[in-house]
Length: 338
Image (cartoon, rainbow, N blue to C red; front, top):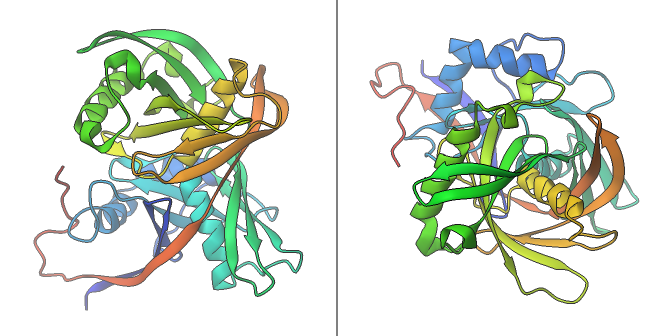
Protein backbone atom coordinates (compact mmCIF):
# COMPACT_ATOMS: atom_id res chain seq x y z
CA UNK A 1 0.00 0.00 0.00
CA UNK A 2 1.28 3.51 -0.72
CA UNK A 3 2.27 5.81 2.12
CA UNK A 4 -0.23 8.56 2.89
CA UNK A 5 0.28 12.05 4.30
CA UNK A 6 -2.68 14.32 5.08
CA UNK A 7 -2.22 18.10 4.95
CA UNK A 8 -4.27 21.27 5.20
CA UNK A 9 -2.97 24.08 3.02
CA UNK A 10 -3.37 27.82 3.60
CA UNK A 11 -1.85 30.92 2.13
CA UNK A 12 -0.95 34.00 4.13
CA UNK A 13 -0.64 37.11 1.94
CA UNK A 14 0.26 34.85 -0.98
CA UNK A 15 2.83 32.66 0.79
CA UNK A 16 1.89 28.97 1.09
CA UNK A 17 1.78 27.12 4.38
CA UNK A 18 1.22 23.35 4.42
CA UNK A 19 0.03 22.14 7.83
CA UNK A 20 0.82 18.53 8.71
CA UNK A 21 -1.12 17.68 11.89
CA UNK A 22 -0.07 14.03 12.11
CA UNK A 23 3.40 12.78 11.26
CA UNK A 24 4.15 9.07 11.80
CA UNK A 25 7.40 9.84 13.64
CA UNK A 26 8.31 10.44 17.26
CA UNK A 27 9.92 13.88 17.58
CA UNK A 28 12.44 13.45 20.36
CA UNK A 29 13.33 16.41 22.57
CA UNK A 30 12.40 18.10 25.82
CA UNK A 31 11.13 21.21 24.02
CA UNK A 32 10.47 22.46 20.51
CA UNK A 33 14.02 23.78 19.94
CA UNK A 34 15.38 20.35 20.83
CA UNK A 35 12.83 18.69 18.56
CA UNK A 36 14.05 20.90 15.70
CA UNK A 37 17.62 19.73 16.25
CA UNK A 38 16.40 16.14 16.27
CA UNK A 39 14.51 16.70 13.03
CA UNK A 40 17.58 18.20 11.37
CA UNK A 41 19.52 15.00 12.12
CA UNK A 42 16.74 12.50 11.33
CA UNK A 43 16.86 10.88 7.86
CA UNK A 44 13.24 9.72 8.31
CA UNK A 45 11.92 13.22 9.06
CA UNK A 46 14.06 14.71 6.30
CA UNK A 47 12.52 12.26 3.85
CA UNK A 48 8.98 13.28 4.83
CA UNK A 49 9.86 16.97 4.61
CA UNK A 50 11.19 16.47 1.09
CA UNK A 51 8.17 14.42 0.01
CA UNK A 52 5.80 17.22 1.05
CA UNK A 53 7.99 20.12 -0.06
CA UNK A 54 9.75 18.97 -3.22
CA UNK A 55 8.25 18.48 -6.65
CA UNK A 56 6.02 16.82 -7.77
CA UNK A 57 3.99 17.44 -4.56
CA UNK A 58 5.47 20.86 -3.81
CA UNK A 59 7.91 23.31 -5.35
CA UNK A 60 11.06 25.31 -4.65
CA UNK A 61 9.17 28.02 -2.74
CA UNK A 62 6.96 25.71 -0.68
CA UNK A 63 6.63 26.19 3.08
CA UNK A 64 4.97 24.16 5.82
CA UNK A 65 5.08 22.83 9.34
CA UNK A 66 4.86 19.62 11.36
CA UNK A 67 2.74 19.90 14.50
CA UNK A 68 4.54 18.62 17.60
CA UNK A 69 3.95 18.57 21.33
CA UNK A 70 4.48 22.00 22.96
CA UNK A 71 7.07 22.76 25.60
CA UNK A 72 4.41 22.57 28.31
CA UNK A 73 0.69 22.95 28.92
CA UNK A 74 0.88 26.71 28.44
CA UNK A 75 0.67 26.36 24.65
CA UNK A 76 -1.97 24.78 22.45
CA UNK A 77 0.65 23.01 20.29
CA UNK A 78 4.16 23.26 18.95
CA UNK A 79 5.36 23.41 15.36
CA UNK A 80 8.51 22.73 13.38
CA UNK A 81 8.61 25.03 10.36
CA UNK A 82 10.16 23.69 7.16
CA UNK A 83 11.12 24.85 3.68
CA UNK A 84 13.06 23.34 0.77
CA UNK A 85 16.41 23.56 2.57
CA UNK A 86 15.53 22.44 6.08
CA UNK A 87 13.87 23.66 9.28
CA UNK A 88 13.65 27.33 10.26
CA UNK A 89 13.59 28.86 13.73
CA UNK A 90 10.58 31.13 13.13
CA UNK A 91 7.79 31.79 10.67
CA UNK A 92 5.32 34.62 11.11
CA UNK A 93 3.15 33.89 8.09
CA UNK A 94 2.97 30.27 9.24
CA UNK A 95 1.94 31.34 12.73
CA UNK A 96 -0.90 33.42 11.27
CA UNK A 97 -2.01 30.45 9.13
CA UNK A 98 -1.86 28.10 12.12
CA UNK A 99 -3.96 30.45 14.23
CA UNK A 100 -6.63 30.80 11.56
CA UNK A 101 -6.63 27.02 10.97
CA UNK A 102 -6.86 26.27 14.70
CA UNK A 103 -9.99 28.40 15.08
CA UNK A 104 -11.62 27.47 11.76
CA UNK A 105 -11.05 23.75 12.39
CA UNK A 106 -12.30 23.90 15.98
CA UNK A 107 -9.00 22.71 17.41
CA UNK A 108 -9.09 25.88 19.53
CA UNK A 109 -12.59 27.09 20.44
CA UNK A 110 -13.34 30.63 19.34
CA UNK A 111 -13.69 33.03 22.27
CA UNK A 112 -17.13 34.71 22.42
CA UNK A 113 -15.34 38.05 22.83
CA UNK A 114 -14.24 37.87 19.20
CA UNK A 115 -10.53 37.55 20.02
CA UNK A 116 -8.99 34.10 20.50
CA UNK A 117 -5.37 33.62 21.50
CA UNK A 118 -3.77 30.56 19.88
CA UNK A 119 -0.52 30.00 21.76
CA UNK A 120 2.20 28.16 19.85
CA UNK A 121 5.68 26.98 20.82
CA UNK A 122 8.16 27.48 17.99
CA UNK A 123 11.95 26.97 17.96
CA UNK A 124 12.61 30.64 18.78
CA UNK A 125 10.18 30.74 21.71
CA UNK A 126 6.50 31.08 22.51
CA UNK A 127 4.37 33.12 20.11
CA UNK A 128 0.68 33.94 19.84
CA UNK A 129 -1.72 34.13 16.93
CA UNK A 130 -4.47 36.47 18.13
CA UNK A 131 -7.38 35.48 15.88
CA UNK A 132 -10.22 37.95 15.34
CA UNK A 133 -13.73 36.69 14.51
CA UNK A 134 -17.09 38.34 13.83
CA UNK A 135 -20.42 37.63 15.50
CA UNK A 136 -20.95 34.59 13.27
CA UNK A 137 -17.56 33.13 14.19
CA UNK A 138 -15.99 33.85 10.78
CA UNK A 139 -12.32 34.74 10.94
CA UNK A 140 -11.55 38.36 10.12
CA UNK A 141 -7.79 38.21 10.55
CA UNK A 142 -5.01 37.40 12.97
CA UNK A 143 -2.28 39.26 14.82
CA UNK A 144 1.07 37.50 15.16
CA UNK A 145 2.65 38.49 18.48
CA UNK A 146 6.30 37.56 18.18
CA UNK A 147 9.19 36.98 20.55
CA UNK A 148 11.22 40.07 21.55
CA UNK A 149 13.13 41.36 18.54
CA UNK A 150 16.30 43.46 18.51
CA UNK A 151 19.15 44.79 16.42
CA UNK A 152 22.37 42.77 16.61
CA UNK A 153 24.66 44.84 14.37
CA UNK A 154 24.29 48.06 12.39
CA UNK A 155 25.82 49.01 9.03
CA UNK A 156 27.77 45.80 8.49
CA UNK A 157 29.88 46.02 5.29
CA UNK A 158 29.47 43.16 2.81
CA UNK A 159 31.37 42.69 -0.44
CA UNK A 160 29.08 41.68 -3.31
CA UNK A 161 29.13 41.52 -7.11
CA UNK A 162 27.39 44.92 -7.01
CA UNK A 163 30.11 46.43 -4.86
CA UNK A 164 30.37 46.85 -1.12
CA UNK A 165 27.02 47.29 0.60
CA UNK A 166 25.94 47.93 4.18
CA UNK A 167 23.30 45.91 6.00
CA UNK A 168 21.70 45.91 9.43
CA UNK A 169 21.50 42.52 11.15
CA UNK A 170 18.47 41.98 13.37
CA UNK A 171 16.84 39.11 15.27
CA UNK A 172 13.10 38.73 14.78
CA UNK A 173 12.79 35.06 15.75
CA UNK A 174 15.34 34.40 13.03
CA UNK A 175 18.34 36.51 12.05
CA UNK A 176 17.97 38.78 9.03
CA UNK A 177 20.32 41.01 7.07
CA UNK A 178 18.49 44.07 5.71
CA UNK A 179 19.57 45.76 2.48
CA UNK A 180 18.20 48.95 0.95
CA UNK A 181 17.25 48.03 -2.62
CA UNK A 182 18.23 51.48 -3.90
CA UNK A 183 21.82 50.98 -2.70
CA UNK A 184 22.26 48.27 -5.35
CA UNK A 185 20.18 49.92 -8.05
CA UNK A 186 17.05 47.78 -7.60
CA UNK A 187 13.39 48.23 -6.85
CA UNK A 188 11.26 45.61 -5.11
CA UNK A 189 9.22 44.72 -8.18
CA UNK A 190 8.66 41.46 -10.06
CA UNK A 191 10.90 42.47 -12.97
CA UNK A 192 13.86 42.51 -10.55
CA UNK A 193 12.94 39.16 -9.02
CA UNK A 194 16.04 37.33 -10.30
CA UNK A 195 18.41 40.12 -9.28
CA UNK A 196 16.87 40.27 -5.81
CA UNK A 197 17.41 36.53 -5.37
CA UNK A 198 21.03 36.86 -6.50
CA UNK A 199 21.96 39.71 -4.15
CA UNK A 200 19.97 38.15 -1.31
CA UNK A 201 21.93 34.92 -1.64
CA UNK A 202 25.26 36.78 -1.79
CA UNK A 203 24.59 38.73 1.40
CA UNK A 204 23.28 35.71 3.28
CA UNK A 205 26.20 33.44 2.48
CA UNK A 206 28.76 36.19 3.05
CA UNK A 207 27.50 36.68 6.62
CA UNK A 208 26.00 33.32 7.55
CA UNK A 209 29.04 31.94 9.41
CA UNK A 210 30.37 35.33 10.55
CA UNK A 211 30.42 36.69 14.11
CA UNK A 212 27.65 39.11 13.07
CA UNK A 213 25.34 36.11 12.56
CA UNK A 214 25.86 34.67 16.04
CA UNK A 215 22.88 34.71 18.37
CA UNK A 216 23.94 36.14 21.76
CA UNK A 217 22.23 33.46 23.87
CA UNK A 218 21.47 30.33 21.85
CA UNK A 219 23.73 29.08 19.08
CA UNK A 220 20.83 27.04 17.69
CA UNK A 221 19.41 30.39 16.53
CA UNK A 222 22.64 31.53 14.88
CA UNK A 223 23.12 32.04 11.16
CA UNK A 224 21.55 34.47 8.70
CA UNK A 225 18.18 32.99 7.81
CA UNK A 226 17.41 35.54 5.12
CA UNK A 227 18.13 38.84 3.44
CA UNK A 228 15.40 41.48 3.45
CA UNK A 229 15.70 43.68 0.37
CA UNK A 230 13.53 46.71 1.14
CA UNK A 231 12.50 50.08 -0.21
CA UNK A 232 10.64 53.01 1.31
CA UNK A 233 7.37 54.18 -0.26
CA UNK A 234 5.20 57.25 0.20
CA UNK A 235 2.79 56.62 3.04
CA UNK A 236 -0.24 58.27 4.57
CA UNK A 237 0.23 60.68 7.41
CA UNK A 238 1.13 58.89 10.62
CA UNK A 239 2.41 55.67 9.06
CA UNK A 240 5.63 54.27 7.65
CA UNK A 241 5.23 52.38 4.38
CA UNK A 242 7.82 50.01 2.92
CA UNK A 243 7.97 47.17 0.42
CA UNK A 244 10.27 44.18 0.75
CA UNK A 245 11.28 40.87 -0.74
CA UNK A 246 12.72 38.45 1.79
CA UNK A 247 15.15 35.96 0.28
CA UNK A 248 15.49 33.12 2.78
CA UNK A 249 17.04 29.65 2.96
CA UNK A 250 18.97 29.32 -0.32
CA UNK A 251 17.18 31.63 -2.74
CA UNK A 252 13.60 31.06 -1.65
CA UNK A 253 11.46 34.22 -1.93
CA UNK A 254 8.65 34.99 0.48
CA UNK A 255 5.48 35.99 -1.39
CA UNK A 256 4.16 37.62 1.76
CA UNK A 257 5.86 40.56 3.50
CA UNK A 258 7.40 37.88 5.82
CA UNK A 259 6.14 37.83 9.40
CA UNK A 260 9.41 37.33 11.27
CA UNK A 261 11.15 39.55 8.73
CA UNK A 262 8.58 42.26 9.37
CA UNK A 263 9.34 41.85 13.08
CA UNK A 264 13.01 42.45 12.31
CA UNK A 265 12.11 45.58 10.36
CA UNK A 266 9.97 46.86 13.25
CA UNK A 267 12.92 46.39 15.62
CA UNK A 268 15.35 48.05 13.21
CA UNK A 269 13.12 51.02 12.39
CA UNK A 270 12.37 51.52 16.09
CA UNK A 271 16.08 51.51 16.94
CA UNK A 272 16.69 54.05 14.17
CA UNK A 273 13.99 56.34 15.55
CA UNK A 274 11.93 56.06 12.36
CA UNK A 275 9.09 54.03 13.86
CA UNK A 276 7.81 55.79 16.95
CA UNK A 277 5.25 54.75 19.57
CA UNK A 278 1.84 54.09 18.05
CA UNK A 279 3.08 54.48 14.46
CA UNK A 280 2.28 51.47 12.24
CA UNK A 281 4.51 49.98 9.59
CA UNK A 282 2.57 49.25 6.42
CA UNK A 283 4.70 46.46 5.02
CA UNK A 284 4.11 45.26 1.47
CA UNK A 285 5.44 42.26 -0.43
CA UNK A 286 6.79 41.89 -3.94
CA UNK A 287 3.31 40.69 -5.05
CA UNK A 288 1.53 43.65 -3.41
CA UNK A 289 0.09 41.88 -0.36
CA UNK A 290 0.34 43.66 2.96
CA UNK A 291 0.95 43.24 6.68
CA UNK A 292 0.42 45.97 9.25
CA UNK A 293 2.92 45.90 12.10
CA UNK A 294 3.76 47.81 15.24
CA UNK A 295 5.84 47.57 18.39
CA UNK A 296 3.39 46.81 21.19
CA UNK A 297 5.95 46.79 23.98
CA UNK A 298 9.52 47.82 24.67
CA UNK A 299 11.54 45.32 26.67
CA UNK A 300 15.12 44.21 27.31
CA UNK A 301 16.16 40.90 25.73
CA UNK A 302 19.61 39.34 25.43
CA UNK A 303 20.98 42.44 27.16
CA UNK A 304 19.67 44.71 24.41
CA UNK A 305 16.82 47.14 23.96
CA UNK A 306 14.11 45.19 22.18
CA UNK A 307 10.51 45.40 21.06
CA UNK A 308 7.64 42.93 21.04
CA UNK A 309 6.28 43.16 17.47
CA UNK A 310 2.70 42.53 16.46
CA UNK A 311 2.15 41.71 12.79
CA UNK A 312 -1.40 41.71 11.45
CA UNK A 313 -2.70 39.86 8.40
CA UNK A 314 -4.89 36.92 7.55
CA UNK A 315 -4.75 33.49 5.93
CA UNK A 316 -7.09 31.54 3.69
CA UNK A 317 -7.70 27.85 3.19
CA UNK A 318 -6.54 26.69 -0.24
CA UNK A 319 -6.99 22.94 0.00
CA UNK A 320 -6.94 19.69 1.92
CA UNK A 321 -4.80 16.92 0.53
CA UNK A 322 -3.92 13.30 0.95
CA UNK A 323 -0.55 12.78 -0.66
CA UNK A 324 0.44 9.29 -1.75
CA UNK A 325 3.88 7.76 -2.15
CA UNK A 326 3.72 4.76 -4.46
CA UNK A 327 6.45 2.24 -3.56
CA UNK A 328 7.18 1.84 -7.29
CA UNK A 329 7.85 5.55 -7.76
CA UNK A 330 11.49 6.21 -8.60
CA UNK A 331 11.17 9.96 -8.00
CA UNK A 332 10.86 9.71 -4.20
CA UNK A 333 11.32 11.87 -2.16
CA UNK A 334 11.28 14.27 -5.12
CA UNK A 335 13.36 17.03 -6.67
CA UNK A 336 13.66 20.82 -6.78
CA UNK A 337 14.10 22.97 -9.88
CA UNK A 338 14.44 26.76 -9.90
